[in-house]
Image (cartoon, rainbow, N blue to C red; front, side, top):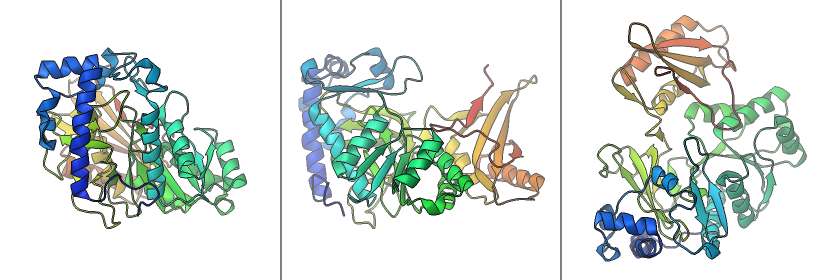
Length: 430
C-alpha cells in the first residue's frame, strides 16, 4: 500500500529489531549529549548499557511537559547549536511555551512521515491541497505544507479563518483536499451549504488534525460537503508535529509510524503499562530524533492500542482515535468523566447536532450541578424538545452514572471556532 514512502522495515519482526537498535542509540545519544537526560538517567540509576531488550524501556524515567517548561528555552537539547536549524513551539496555554529544536535530519524525517500520511490517504500528485491551519511557530501549517510538497501535490496555504477566501479558493483553484481542525471543517461545511456552492467545488478528501473529533461532527461535515473520505491525523509538537500517523481508508484506527517512535500506553495513575486494548495515556520515545529526543514523554493524550493487522494490509500498528487528555477529565460528584464519553452518547442520537457544551456549577447548597446544552439537528424541525431532553438525560445516567440537566438549543446556536472549540466550562471554583 505504501510504495512511495514505505516503512523502513518489511514486517513486525524487523520492526522490533529496528526499534531496539534505535532505542539503544537514542538513550546513548541523550545520555551523552543532554545535560537534562544525563541528570535524569543518573537519578533513576539507569545507564545506556542497561537497555538490552525493548522491555527494558520501563527502566527509563518519564519526561513531562513541565520538564520542557523548566528547561526553557532549549529543553532536551542534545546537539550543538550549530546543528539546530529551526525551532517550533506548542500553543503555550499554561506558563512558558514548550520549545522543540530540529536538526536537518529531524526535518527530513518529519517530511517523510507526513508525506506517508498523504499517501495513506490516497492522494496523488494531481491533488490540490488547501491548508487551513495556523502558520508561525506552530508545527501545524508548516508541517502540512512541507509534507504536501515532499509528497508532490500542489499546496495552497490559506491558513485558518477568512471563510470568504476559503470558499473563493475552493471554487477558483478547484482544491481537492482541505486540511484543518474539525471545528474549522464544520465551519467551512456549513458555509459551503449556506452559499450553495457544493456543485461548484471539487472537494474529495478532508484531513482533520490538532483537535479531538467525534462521529457526529464527521457525519455532519460529510453530509454538508458530500465528502466521504475524512481522515484523522494526530499531531504533537513535542514528537515532531502533525503527520506521525493517519487512519487509512477503512477508518478503523490510526496507523502510527512505529518505525520512527515507540508508543506505550500506561495507566496515568499507576504509571504501569496497560493491557493491549485497554485505555490509557500515550507515552512517546523517539528513535531517530537528534536535536530534542523524547524518552518516555507523557503526552497526557488518552487512547488505546487496536490489536491485529488492519485489512488495508499495512502491518504498522494502530491506536484508536484520541479520546481526550488526562487533564481534560473532570470530576462530577465523584465520577471521572471524559468529554469523549459525552461525544459518544450524543453521536448515536440522530435528532441532535454536532455541537454541545457542558457547564459545571456549584450552588449555594454546596452541591455540584451539570447543565448539558445540545444543539438540535438541522433536520429535526418540530421535534419534542422535552422528550429529547429526557432521553439524553436517561442515556447520560445509564452510560456515565451521573444526573445532568439538558437544554436543547437551536441549530447553530452554540459558537463555532476556526481553531479548537471549547466544550467544557467548569465554573465551580471561580
